[in-house]
Image 1 (cartoon, rainbow, N blue to C red):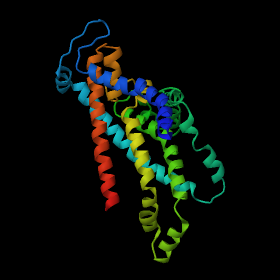
Image 2 (cartoon, rainbow, N blue to C red):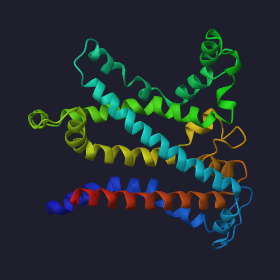
Image 3 (cartoon, helix red, strand yellow):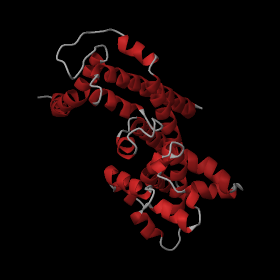
Length: 289
């Protein structure tokens, strides 16, 4: 048997798994998007674009869509900024930095469910850590159930994302920074570059590929994230934290309209595909320039 055929044969198991657990569910979901399939009945009909037309007049869908876009944009941008700051801090040669590096990933390795429970407990109106601190500072009028306040529930979700993911960004960017040759910085110093210019013209270009990877991964993860919102607020209060993954879940398992839920999922897929086409195109143009 030729070596090429042996290689193709070795790919068969992994390709089979991908086909069963990724390709088939994807195309089956696309098929369901054009049906009125419901979990409460066996029979269904193909309804063409009816589900997508229904989306146009669904206020909760548009609210969830807007929340998903805002949450993803804010979280990814803030994670990127704080991740670079954290990586720069971990590069400093100061006492205790070794211990700090060893524990900085603790928030990322804690299971999501445990993280959400911890934050929900901190946000409690009577025994939560946040309100206890406010009371000690004489700010009793500011105490509240933070995840139940429509004005601050979404910012609290953003903080939860940052607490969990910024260390991951920091460690990834630290690895990229350490791969930048020291001679680049020395040459920049000889040319009279200040701290900002060394960061702008040496560090940032060295982080470019890692930034692309991290942003791509976390746009996909944040836009599709279900567990943070569902476990912490369930989409409330009064839909203030409703996002598309939670809305898909509600349509599937509360309303049992999986055809309509599949249509929402299809829109999410199209949005992410459009984002990646634009983002990759922008990145490639940047490299050529």
